[in-house]
Length: 174
Image (cartoon, rainbow, N blue to C red):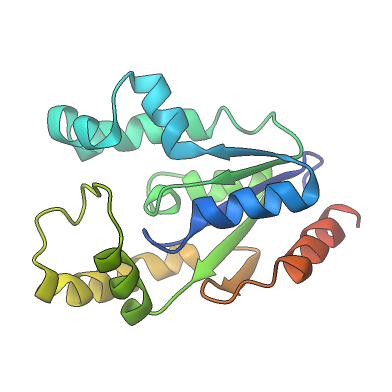
């Protein structure tokens, strides 16, 4: 394990990365960073506006730049965007800089969460509700090759935070 105590939470949109990250950071007494918020600070605009005004490719460039500023942190939990691991060398970077945890969920679970949630998600804003699950199935299938490389894969629906805390602590103490 790298010397810095950094944990990257990865997974599909709606899998609960930010919520899990906050809870894990609190249980460990570490700081929490939402990468999307840092991207917005860096760009000076909200993510939907970056997508709309500058395009997804520019968003991914900013995302990668901001991600690579996290490597010098310690005792930090970072929730990433759903696509963060899947672009450029981001997954390799996260694996070399810290510990990665994938919050795995089924397309059915993700569809329910996304249909029940509020908030603008640029990648699905034009996907009709009745096509959402198929969209998620296809995108999840394409992203699994990155998500599956995570150091730890946990069930995103029933996270055992005591166990997760112990696993993280154990990884950095060996």
